Length: 219
Image 1: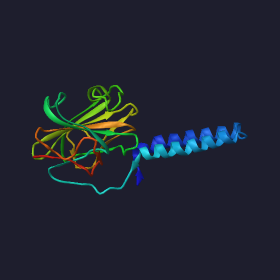
Image 2: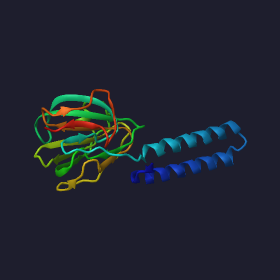
Image 3: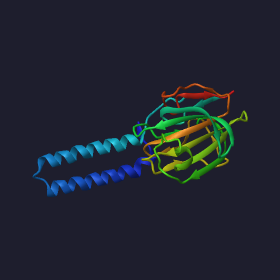
């Protein structure tokens, strides 16, 4: 397991905070044993929590010409037909994955193809499970066209804790299935919009792994 590059600055600031906090306690409150031990334990716990947010575990990825691979770790919270109003403006099959703070927060391309559309939207920070988060929160929208002519849309959505979405794609890019397309810090959500009639291979409340779980199969 390695640490993702998006965590370097946050981890460095956390170490600095821990150093300053412990130095102050050791200098001013050296005679209060319980307080010193509380700060030591708190510091260790904080460092471990921040470290695990940015972990990048080694994985053997799934692949398949007509497979849609899960773009994120988390739990499936939505499987439903809905109207996608930003790009397709028609009925689509939506599958949403909620990423809790303990999940790996790397986002991976669900299919290979060409990026036909990309847009970043600043916005609110509603809880990621709130239905309005899809249209009101900070988010990105990416549309990739498969070589068979079908397109899927996937959307990074910031949650109540997440304040920064990172993306590595732009319109015109050729992307490869399971390679990284972005990262969301802390809690968040990823929505995937598939053509109606697509075979979905996951169920509600199923725990999924980014780059590993087969989300659906294109016809």
